[in-house]
Image (cartoon, rainbow, N blue to C red; front, top):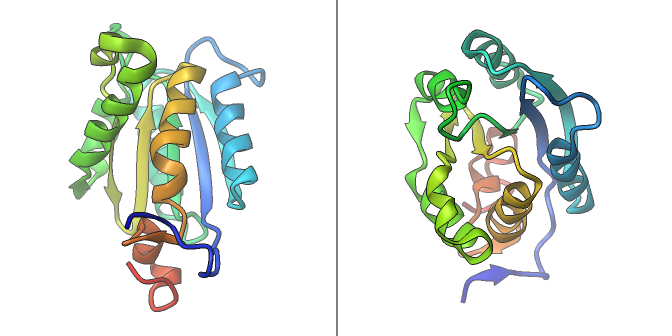
Length: 178
């Protein structure tokens, strides 16, 4: 049966959070929500930043984090819609050597329960850049809440069975079953 196996040890991941926005500043609620959720779950905040809706700025920050062996996972919030300035997918997809199609499917299923068909306006996606997993969420706090609470919280928990992404993180290889 799928779920958290409390008899197993928890192995925290080191997670960076990137907010993509031309208007948000340090009072960014979506990035703050993700930081609060991941730290309350027992993970470590590896870094946090805000960049403008600019392909090169997004790509540079994400690539620098993906190149850092101290960062296991990157979460982004913002820039996944259909407004002209929403360019997060265009910035990040070329960096990914693998895409995780199932993430978008699960995100949209979860999101439909809270925003109905408006979930169609999101281009949320996930993939892998080198050994680093990246999850791109919409910029609203509700979408970040749905993404973390209904998908990422369990998928990033090493105790989740039958498997979790934690077992595919190189520094946990051999420690956590994937």
